[in-house]
Image (tube, rainbow, N blue to C red; front, side, top):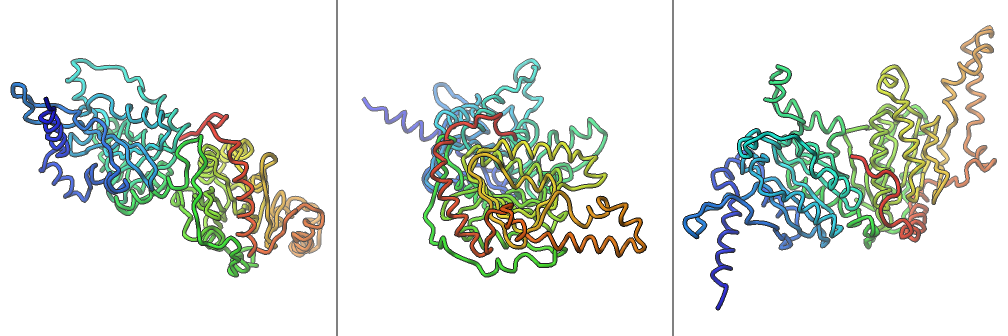
Length: 516
């Protein structure tokens, strides 16, 4: 006796589920310029690799012993392959009750998080959901006390595998928090919003009328660092997710993926001889240095709109993935403020978690100063960066391209583990800048001079004359002063040494773990 009739029924009900909220709901979703969850998965996944888990979960309409209709759960979960590596994902279906929690069936999201954790594969959230609804109370016949169920699993997952959150619509409540429980997140320009509570709740609580865009679109959440990257559209969002994961291992027990490259290891770019201006007061574009040194087209920037004094991202050297950061003198002189410090810590923790060497192109004038910075808690922020840097364990290389001053400047250095430093001839540094320090250290001598301004300039000129990095190199205060054109070959040599040591660090990080 055959089970073909049952198999045919399985196929029929699966097709019912694939209709999502129905033609009208899907058409309305499309009219807003948005893709459905199934179209998003098609963009994300390698062709033909999508395997759905629990497609029949939903509310069925029965006539006798026959299912006449099936309203599916508004959460879709499954696995697929990205660049031929397996990942797990969950996605909200906004065509069914706007992705609200009262239209969920079972706990599919927790199921797939468990699967990702147990199988040690990356996990991706495609968020387009409004969170909780008071209709849930009616369904349950009671209210309830929130317990944070699933939070422990979400945190544990972040200690094991790469986690990505993509905000693809209006996201509030628990999904908004989930947008930050990850190693990388993004939103779509003109189509995504993130907020703890939506406009109607805000109006009830504060009396203020506000649009969802003014409450939490990219003008707010990308600028303040809640969301790291901004995608131009949904295809770009899926492309960025695929690219981010390409630098990371599947889990903390594996090495990052090394790829073949035709970019020559001994490439020496002439532009590096003049990229840093001789006039110390002039600025430059740090990404020009990155593009000249890193594997061509390999730099993937993370958080370009937040903490702009520091450029951070992932890249490759000789086909080997690494974290990359650089001071950006175009913003605040490149000095570290609270936002740049937070951004630095995020990259440090990402590299430590997933065994990525870190390369730092340093031009640090020091921590940002002034009343505004003190009110913002720069001292506490600076202390956190100090601790994160010195507690890190990844192989670490620093290219000093111009200046290093004060405690923040000292963070280019680490006393333990594989650390290598190369210094360009354009380098200068110290405990504080000569221009500002002269007036303090020589205050009495300047004030008692017949011409105080001339005396100050005379002292500054004398100090500038002895600030040459060659004097520092003579005392072995600089161990490797290099031709800037040799930067790429030397960094690839460092990466080869690092790659031999990385297997020793495999497994969970022994520290407190990654913070959202």
